[in-house]
Image 1 (cartoon, rainbow, N blue to C red):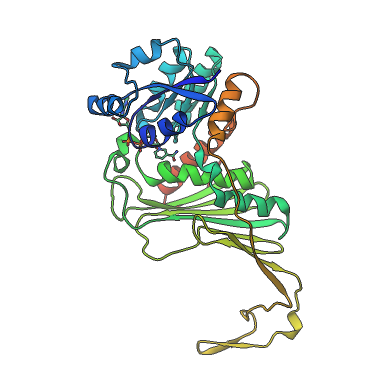
Image 2: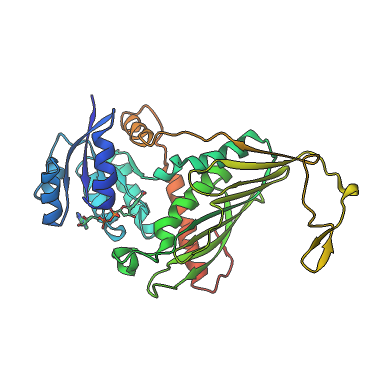
Length: 348
Ligand SMILES: NC(=O)c1ccc[n+]([C@@H]2O[C@H](COP(=O)([O-])OP(=O)(O)OC[C@H]3O[C@@H](n4cnc5c(N)ncnc54)[C@H](O)[C@@H]3O)[C@@H](O)[C@H]2O)c1
C-alpha cells in the first residue's frame, strides 16, 4: 500500500517539486498540504490538492504517514518536531537546521518517537556528480588528489527570504549544503579542516557567494565555490587524479577525461607562450595521453521517496543518514566560523 504524504509549505519547493513528485510516485500518494499563507492554500485547492485549514488538522489526520517540510529554513525545527511528536515520519528540506544543537534536538525526538527523519538531499541524483563518482570509483585515472565544484550565476541572491539572515538565508545554506553533501558523497565524510570566505556583492546581510576549501583526513582536498555575480563561465567540476584529469563543463554535459599514459618527458620541445619559451607548460599529444568522454550517467530522483518509504517499513537504511546530516551541517557551521574570522583554518 502506498504511504500517504502531506506537505507543509506550498511554495517553490513544496508545490513545484514535492507535490509533483508525490503525485507521480509509485510508492506514495499525496494526502494534502498546509501553508501558513491562505492564498497558497487556495492555490492548492485550485490545483486539485486538499489544503488542510490548520497544521493541527494535518498532523491529526491518522491517514498521513509522512510529512515533508518545505518551509523557509528558520522554521524547520519547530515543524519537524511537531510532526514527529504527532507520530509522523519526516522529510525535511535542506538545510535541515541552522545549528548543530537544533539538529540534535530533532534527531533526539525522532529517536524517542521511533520515527524516520531525514533531509532531502535530492542533488545526490544529479548526473554530473554521478559522473564524478563513477570516474573516482572506477579508478581509471587513479587516486583523486583534489576536486573543484562550482555553481555560478549572475543574478545575485534571490530577493525573497533567502536574502535575510533571520530566515537562514545566504548561499552557504542554500547551495553550499548541496555541494558539500555531494563532495562528501564522492570523497568521504572524514573532513579535517575548512577555510571559507564570503562574497557580499549584491547583499550585505548574508553571503551571496562563498569560497570553501575542505581538507580530508585522507589527504584529499576539495574547493567549493558558489557565485551569484559571475558573468564568465567556469567548469562545473574539475577533478585531478594521480593518473589524469577530468572536467565537466556544464550541468548536463558529459565528463571529459584526459588520461596520462606515458610521462615522455625527455622529448618535450619548448613552446612559445606569449613573450617567452616553456617546456613545463608544453601541451600533451596522443602519444602521452588518451582523451575521451565518459557516458552520461542516469538517475531517478523518485528513488529518494522510494528509499524513504522502505526505511519507514524497516526494509532499508535511510539514504541520507543522521551521521551524514551531522557531518554536512558541521562543515557548514565551521565554514561560517572561518568566514567570520577572515578565512582562518578551522579544524572540525
Ligand atoms: N532541495 C532543493 O533542491 C531545494 C530547492 C529549493 C528550496 N529548497 C528548500 O525548500 C524550503 C522552501 O524553499 P522554497 O524555495 O519552496 O521557499 P518558498 O518561499 O517558495 O516557499 C515556502 C512556503 O512555505 C510557507 N510557509 C512559511 N512559513 C510557514 C509555516 N510556519 N508553516 C507553513 N507554511 C509556511 C510560505 O507561505 C511559502 O508558501 C527551504 O528550506 C529551501 O532551502 C530546497
